[in-house]
Amino acid sequence: MENMHVAVLLFEEFETLDVFGPVEILGRLRNEYGIRFYSLAGGDISNSHGVTIYTRKLQEIKAGVDIFLIPGGYGTRTEVANDPLIKAIREISLSSSYVLTVCTGTALLAKTGLLDNKKATTNKKAYDWVISHGKKVNWIQKARWVTDGKFYTSSGVSAGMDMTLDFLKDRHGIGTARQVADEIEYMWTEDPARDHFHKKRQANAHKS
Amino acid sequence: MENMHVAVLLFEEFETLDVFGPVEILGRLRNEYGIRFYSLAGGDISNSHGVTIYTRKLQEIKAGVDIFLIPGGYGTRTEVANDPLIKAIREISLSSSYVLTVCTGTALLAKTGLLDNKKATTNKKAYDWVISHGKKVNWIQKARWVTDGKFYTSSGVSAGMDMTLDFLKDRHGIGTARQVADEIEYMWTEDPARDHFHKKRQANAHKS
Image (cartoon, rainbow over all chains, first blue to last red; front, side, top):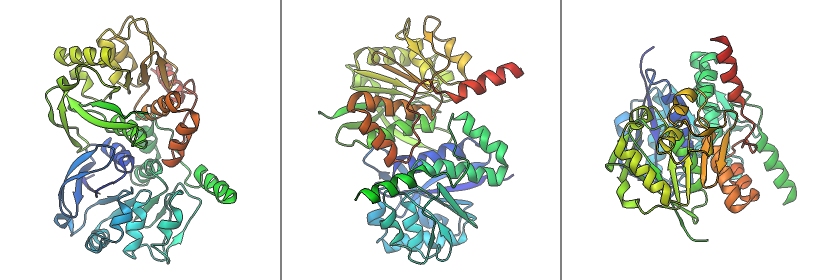
């Protein structure tokens, strides 16, 4: 199998684990996936966890990549209104083989319109905010992650790891996915319908 | 509570999630923990997952920090024989309030002798290699993580997240630790004795 180019989108105040959970899992298959980081303007991108990553410019990949990974984080609250970024995300997503979003990163993809009439999910804590940016999306509230064609969308933060393991399953088989989960001693939630945090959201809603 | 200085040790070929799992969890309490990255020589440190992080020099913190985090990764196979690094780890660990190791990072700490006659655990896949570097350590084979005084040592990769949540529990209470786990939609293994990957190691040992 050829080396697959994974482009990870970064923006100020990205969520650390949204990025590095999937990067750990794809990076384990080092001969299969080559990972690079991008942002709209390029250069150093930081978050309040003290993490700074050097990025290339998104325009370098406007013809698309094999896998386009869009994380969430507080920064999405600003970036969802960043029209040049949303335009770039739309262009790259259209021409990429797969698009994976984690947590509130789904809001950025929803904003492009590309999830309209498709199934998707997102973070449970910021659920109402995210779905307000994709009114034509078929939102699945109870799901650890959702796959619809080339689009993989996950619930909050850690759920991105479960989704990425499922992506490996779809491409390399369940054996490879389980092996990677074992190597990193991760208790993979293999069933996307098993979403404990959905229940917690419901419980909180009943309280308020 | 004052801002606690978290120093994360990096070296070439560190394991991505060993670092960024704990960083996500400590970083969530942004008013409590300030995270910085260090290496022996300073400058850019990279791994084969395509991740490059700028580091300060370890000697800047030889008087110790609040929390010293030592990740694992393939790089530990080289670094365990890097005497100046082991000396610096010993010096900083002695003068820091807490030392947290993830996965094969435990080998680096064991090599300093500071874990002698203390309880500790490590990665299940590289167990025999790690314990060879600390023959006087009281190794606990079946454990997701182990705490002994100021030393927290975890099993492989993802187990570092469970350990760091337990560290938050010890310092801020179970409510705070559970809240952080919920925020990142992480299914925290709260009981350190619940170690599924121990069983898998045993099963593999019986096969071979």
